[in-house]
Structure formats: C-alpha cells, structure tokens
Length: 429
Image (cartoon, rainbow, N blue to C red; front, top):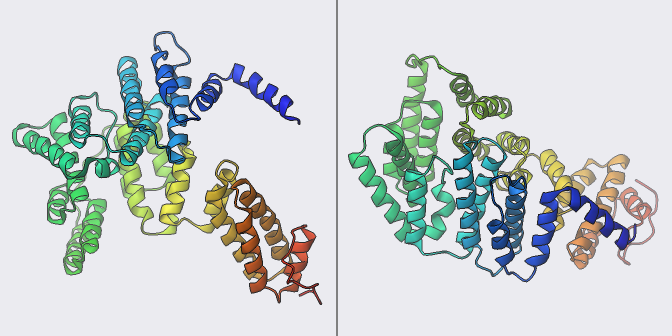
C-alpha cells in the first residue's frame, strides 16, 4: 500500500483505539525530548467517569520506555515518579489493585527506577519517598531496593536503614514490622552484608528455598566451607522436617505448591488464586524473585521464568530474562522472531547463532534454512541501519565455510549477493 493509504488506515484505527491514539499523539509531541505533553496528558486523566484513564497511562508509560531505551538526555524521573503516584492514588480510590492498573503500576515503578539510574535525583529525597510508600502506603507498590540501589547510593540506603532499624526496635507484629523485615533483608543484600543477610535468613522458618539462598550467598562471598556445612545441616533437616500446618485458603495452598515446585504451572495456579483474593501484587513479586534465583542456575529454569513472563503479558521482561540468564536456543529464537520487528538490532546475535547451528548440521535442508535466515539477518541489519556489518559478517561466514559448496549454492539461490572472492561452486556437497 502507498503511504497515504497506510496513514488513513492508522488514523481510522486510532479513532477506535484510545490507547493507540494517545500513544501516537505523545510520540509526535515528545520527539524533541520535551515531556511536557506527557504531563499534560496526566493532567487530563480524570478518573471519575473517564474510561480513557488506562489508555492515557499506557501511552505515558510507552513514551517513558521509548525515551529511556533511546538514551534520552531528558530528566524523566519526575514524570515517572508522578505516574507511579498517580496510578497508586487511583488504585487506592478504586480498591482494585489486582487488574490491569496493578500491572501498569509495577511497570511504572520499574521505569522510575531506570529513570533514577539514568539521572539520579537527590538520594535522601528518593529514600524518603520509598520509606513513605512502604510504611505509610496502602500496600502497593512493593519496592525492590536493588532496582533503586544505584540512585540511592550510600546516603539514601543509610537513610532507609535508619528508619528500618527504628521500626524494628519499637514495632510489634503487624504491617510495619513485616515491611521493615523485608527491607532489612533487601538492605543486607544491596549493601553486601553477608553475615547480616545469613543471620536474617537463618531466623526464618526452615524452608528449602531459604536454605538454598543461604548457600548461594555464602558461595558468592567465597565462603565455600560454610556453604557446604549449611547445605549439610539443611539436608539433615529435610530428612526430618517438622509438621507443616495445613493451608486454610486457596491462595495459601497454591503458594505452598509453588514454593515446593516453582514452575510455570504452579505459578499460573497461584496467579489465579491470588488474583481472586486481591493478593497477586505481593505474591507475584515474591514468586518471580524465586524464579529468577532458579533461572541463574540452569537454562531450564531460565525458560520457565521467560514463559511465565510471557504468560503475564510482559514480552520485554521475558526477553531480558532470556538474555540475562541464558535461556535455551529454541526459546531465544522464538522470542527473537517476535521481537525482530520493533528491536532488530537486539535480535541479530540470536539469528546469527541459529545460522551457525544450522550450518553445523551439515545437511541440505539445514543449509537451505540457513540461507533463509541469512535473508532475515540482511533485513534486520538494514532496518538497524548497519548494512555494512552484514556484509562483513557474510564475508567471514563464507570464508569459514567456503568448502561447503551446497551451502554456497543455497545462499546464491536465496538471492544473497556473495563476496567477490567466492568462486562458482563445484560439485555440490
């Protein structure tokens, strides 16, 4: 279709889709790095009777992510912070934090952390905001200090620690103490206090995941003999475990099943039960933290984490999990195919790995598929504005496999221009 026809179709769709319309308006208005239009959109996002509220919030979040991904020099932290506060206030008024807005709040917090890392605000003011959200808020969002550690620095972390210590000194059982204990553990991790973290974990009721975390912490600190000794004690305890009281509600039962066998199916069951109980935000964060710990140990667990994130409708996070933890080649390729349209440069290494894997099979069908993937790579490099890199890559690949004349034939058949040094193939192999 010609450009005018495509523009008409896009305009017609935007008239029917408020989120697309707001996203296009914001994209056009913020090309120069000016975020005032995003603030204006939040100003008009009146919640009472405004069915477009979620669409406007989604457009603002999309703009924040796009500008952060592009390395915008603009200070995006104020806009991200305002978005977090705005969604939190709306959720408090509606009382429904398990639905779509709850997910958007988590995304807003993640973007705020990225914005703070890019342009750190006053660390003590950031610490005060985190303390206020955690101790005086309605229970959401739940902050992960590791995401804000860079921006907080030593001054901000010390300020949070001072409040946590004060709460633990005077508070009895209840919400404030629960929050303080969770933050105390996070602080020990972020500050690298191995002894403190081990003491905190050891004080928890004995569970296999807690024992494994203690072992990992000790190993990471180079204290291997202590790690072995703790693992031996935990193994002895597991042979004679204390009786576990029966869970008294569906969410507790599903959480018990997940803790015993973390994976895609138990996660889905926990999500269904916790969402119905309005407890999913907290359970989701804790469940994902456990899956990330396991993902660091094997590609199988990395696949499970990525699949869970895909099920949650978070393809960007699934991709980052694949890259960070090293998922299986099959899953990386699947995600790369989904991501190639919008993020061509990011997916090029995955397609290159797949081409090499196909060539190593040394059979005609694999060579034919490799040639098709090379066409995909050529297109990706073109859209990423790195065509010269493809030319150099192809030249090196052909030089490495120049004796595989069947492969050279398939590349030619796919209408991919070969380096001039490559002569006509002789007898196909």
